[in-house]
Image (cartoon, rainbow, N blue to C red; front, side, top):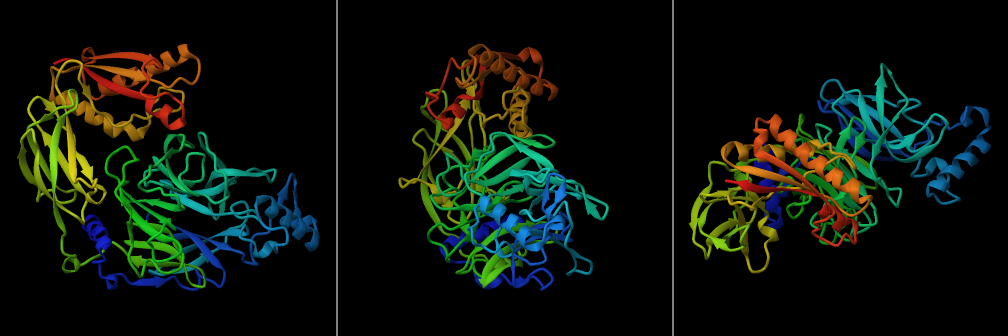
Length: 541
């Protein structure tokens, strides 16, 4: 199913994947039309597809201004003039026919009854109106979706996103979805949610973007509130456009579109694998093979795990249409030959920085029964890597705390070395953690960090005589005394989490250092983020 298939996709870097394995089908003419169809979003059960139709003359013409619907009180010419003015303010050309405008977007819904999407619905106001309407993601509630823009009953519209909830055969008026520090300097924006709705991936153009649009991650804080977008790093993001993200059900595989160089042409669909729990460490993106990608624009991937279909849009037939391909089936005999190479692997003591001897267990991430164990001396040793698979490494040594590391062999430095670290069980030593995320300005831990704290709880359970101190740190933005208090509260929140997991409270001390021990000079938002951290120090072994 999924994991072996990703290994085969990674092998397409060597142009070894047979394109005939994929059979792409264009969706039926109930979904596709002579107009542009974009943004396919599929329900979790695979039986409903939401999509957006652009520039269609039968769009919903409701144009609410305060307590009046201009589509009912104005004649056609005056109505068209008002609509043209609104689209112009959104970025359209002044002489554009508003009916043909790319801002004329309506949501359509197709439902499958016997395997095909036969039933087509064009919802009325308030889900659709004369303003741009598009569904971005489904939620854990089958009757609730995320739509583009924020709408208000006086007819105003603002940047952002909203929740829309079905009410029988109609829809409730959309409710705003809030994201801390949300900002996007251009109208083009995309969003996807993880299956559990805890993680949001956005395509935005912000001050810290590397290109025209980059991918960012945000974490759920409350029902309708997500954390400040965090840049997902230079591996998935380039100086080109990274758009239309989709995150797989297991939250480890990212699909997106990019017009970066080296593709088939136009925009192509890529896939990357998350290598740890930080959401900023990704494998080198792999371009999906033909016929999924073409010489035209291919984008907006959406994988429905229930049906196994990958849905996407393409302009290969002139206008933008919706296509799909069976994605989670493959044949073992089609797997390409494995490319191998030798690299040097060394284990280091994270406290002293010196190389140490130890054992390393390694192998492809999805082959738990085919792992290799090797003893390494202080000078390291040569190990064999496979080119076409993400690898995992677990260094181990008595008296040390180990953690699994994932690595994309494609991204190794030219000297072909792998440096692994172990945390020694010594007083004043640190236990390495991925970043712990909190609600902005609060001591509430975001659910995205639970897995990393569970790992820390497991370490303390495995070493019952180990005592620690949890140090909270902050950047220098704000009142200094308040920052000390916040850092102390956050370290206490981590302690409370561990105690709930069964760790004796007497083994854990807390300390808030506020901005007094920075790692960087706080000269940029990225450097401030490095200073907002939690560290775990060993106090007794």
